[in-house]
Amino acid sequence: MGASSSTPRTVTVENDSPAGVIDISDDVVQRLKTGLPPKEGARQQQHSAPRPAGDGSGPSSYPNPMPPPPAGYGEPSLTSMQVRREKEQELRANDVYWTKRLQTLEANLHKTNQIMEKEYNDAIVDVKKRFESTAVAHQLPPCQELKAKVVECYKKDQHETLNCSADVRAFTDCVNLHRIQILKEKASVEKPAEGK
Image (cartoon, rainbow, N blue to C red; front, side, top):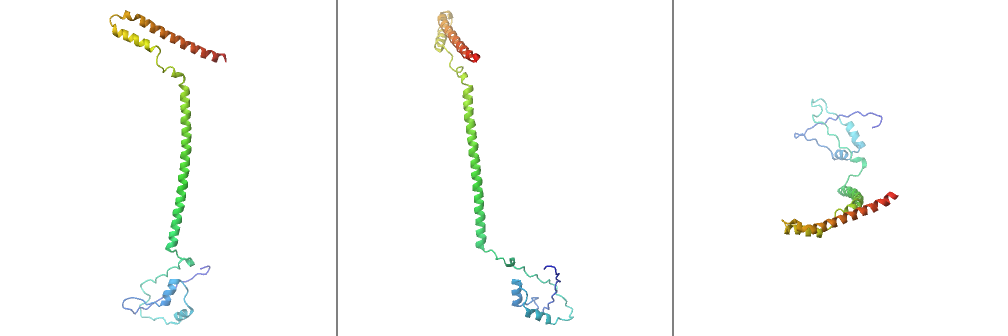
């Protein structure tokens, strides 16, 4: 660590076991698990121990296993309760997010509905204004009862149509009077508009 460079160490182990199993002391297992440095007494024993000489076996063909890294450098490990609490918090945050989003969408929909309803009502008013003057045109034609008498007379006297001349004259007079009345109404409406 830091500025000094470290050199890797090579360890040679003699394995007298026929099964190929290397025995390790409990102290070494404990140091590998915790990642603590070896005790001073154990270091002195390692340095003073004689190395086996030239039997030709050399270093072991199996690589030395790396010690597991220390668990989080002092950080406590997560328990299942902590993981559960974190997941519940994430779920609550997710619920809050979607609730807010749903409320926003509902507010936008409400605004859109209000705008559309206002436009619809305005369109109804506009249509009513445009077709006020045409309402007269859609009424029943005048003199319907006289028309019915003429049609009945023609059906009764199909070969002698001159017998229906009085009914035809009454119907024609009624229609002409109605036309004159409409023309007078149009003329009275146009005169005030011209005077402005």
